[in-house]
Length: 294
Image (cartoon, rainbow, N blue to C red; front, side, top):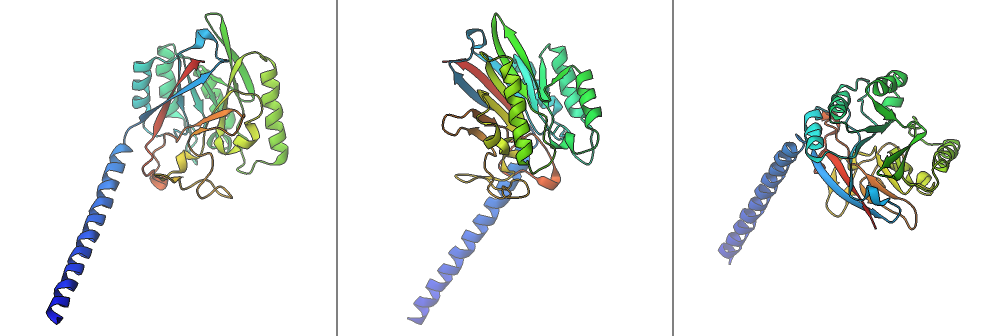
């Protein structure tokens, strides 16, 4: 009987050791794969369907970039643009990576887009607003033929049909006060009032202010800021947000968001490569949005 128990115990130890080894190897393999997929930009595709989209914009393509943070991905993004040749290209902020305020990678992309005659529209993010070089950055972007939608709008025409792009200037501080919420809503409402009959797209850096902007009248909202939660797990989503109430398991961090009859928001997981904020199971991405008339 003693010998039998010893044999059983040895089996338990053997299988336990095997399970531990398999678990360690699996984790190491996952980390190696994760590191590999983080070396290139992945294309994530969405189709947005709406009866308000003009017939002339049916099947129009939008390439959407957010939170590049000076990552060395210009060539990847340019390659996608050459293959897709979108109707236009949008950027929802955080081109710089503080404390540095350079936006060289973004300017490389913009130069190539200009050569392809692809219009570029953008708004600022907190890394442009908080670095003390906001005016210089905006001037550089305007000089590079980027149409900056800082609390402004533009009507885009295609074969007789028209849509509106509206953008809001990043509120700069992480905590958006009640007063700033009021100002943001008023700015959006004012810009949309110029083109009341148009299908409209709102460019807004911070996805976590969706409750503020969701009922302002825009049809579609494009946002970034939360980097997809940095670490993403199946059935859980993103784990890490920004400081404050939304710092763990953040809301509005990724993908398609819609609450009731409010506007649909598509949130980019970002396109950065920051060793101090390493992405796990959340590769850098560029979004392709196809507009479809219902």
